[in-house]
Length: 217
Length: 217
DNA sequence: AAGGTGCAGTGATGAAGGTCACAGGAGGGG
DNA sequence: CCCCTCCTGTGACCTTCATCACTGCACCTT
Image 1 (spheres, each protein chain N blue to C red):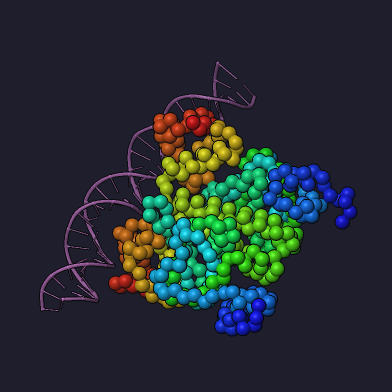
Image 2: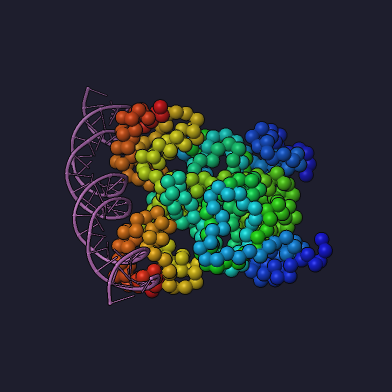
């Protein structure tokens, strides 16, 4: 492939945000086939049942991953951050399966989209890509197990606090902009329960409440 | 490596139970380094916090995978069946991490244990091994998501029925031998709740109850 | 300024399931 | 056969959280 097909911007982004992707030829291949994509806060990137055509390398922002049951009940799973990728994409695309999850931009997000057809080949040819993929799978599994721990073993107040902390981290800000109803959806709880628990947390000095706003202390 | 190092029994087992592991040289490498291991019903194969030294290819029986929190509350996650492997093992060993899960033989179980040091190399050299590993990760992720669905969205009666069905499938028998207390542990529920729900299921004609025994109808 | 809309707070009530207490039956060992 | 232990069944009560109903406030629109 001619050198002018290589996107210098993508190359720089990969080098900066993905130091573990070490092989130069791999970096260059990514720069040749990767496309920079941008999503605004709240924009849906992928929904349940859609086919995945790209694997995302997240550069900036963060992505909320969630799950929904047949009755429309929703449950937040985890955030993807810069330097991470979506493990679900790998096999989704490698086996042409529909997505099991929904991903929505939590903030304005920039990512490099890599067409899925390269995945397989790179896994065999580039050890650092293989490691990256495996590590990513492992992190996601761990995250899912943590989620299971939360739901199975913890009560709503603890889950709520954890949720707020993760959300604050994903947004890199102690201030969370969300309504109680939105939080309730993510935790698969009722709005009233969330309101009451938040008031409780406020009394305990953990948070400060405002309209559409929660300050972590 | 000399041909006499090749364990013919292992070779045959791999060919029979893992047709997707297609490359002959890979089959032979497995036969050279894999060890047949046996576990009795109830025997613990791996506990939380232990280091994993082998990747198991399950040949016969089934393995129960579960999770425990710091207070000793337990939660059943899923069963591993012949033809499957433990995804947790891959990265656990590749990154020398402690196990996050506990595995116990649900029935008398036979598996081929492969020392973890070969994993990485085989991933690059054998496409069918790479596919096997990826597929295995994907299946486990799906299973974890199903578990999350169950805990988050379903009530105890539904979870109990699902659990009984999975357990019957793992044991290849409509009759389940377990006390209500054991089931309660697996579902992170109270023994009394399980007893009452089982009675309910009996009234509805779903099961027949005996001492240490539940018959699925 | 007036009214509308969406968000937050709160009480009442009920269902699911945990906890405690105890009874009764099955089965095994001496 | 008797006793002991383990398993199961059941009633009473409590906590957590969902649901319903309603209030009041903040902010926006006109």
